Every structure is written in structure tokens, then in C-alpha cells.
Length: 67
Image 1 (cartoon, one colour):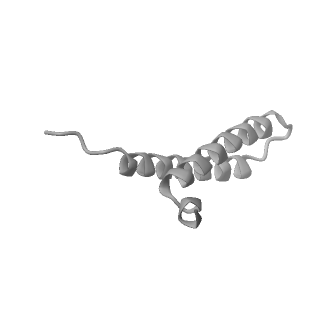
Image 2: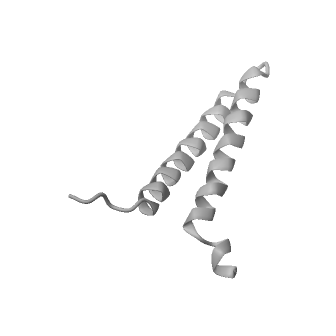
């Protein structure tokens, strides 16, 4: 059971949820006036890093296609 807590599939689910939360946070932050451009850029950079990690995990979890 403990190994299940740190599985790549679970990490993928957690990152996907965090990515969605970050999307919502960025949307809300963009509505505030005045907009903190530096904070928005940092959030977007973090979101992009999460997206890259999600893509990497998805590639690792999918079996190779036969040639």
C-alpha cells in the first residue's frame, strides 16, 4: 500500500489536479486590478513546468507501440 502512495500514476493524478488549480488561480489573478505581472509570469512558468512533468509521466506510463 505504501508503494501505491508514491506511484507514477498517483503522481500524475496529483500533478493534473495541481495544474488545474494553478489554471484557476492564474485566471482569478488576471481579473484583479492592478495585475501583478511578475506573479502571473511566475505562475505561468510553474504551470508550464507542471505540464512538462505531466507529459513526461504520461509517456513513461504508456507502453511502447509495436513497430
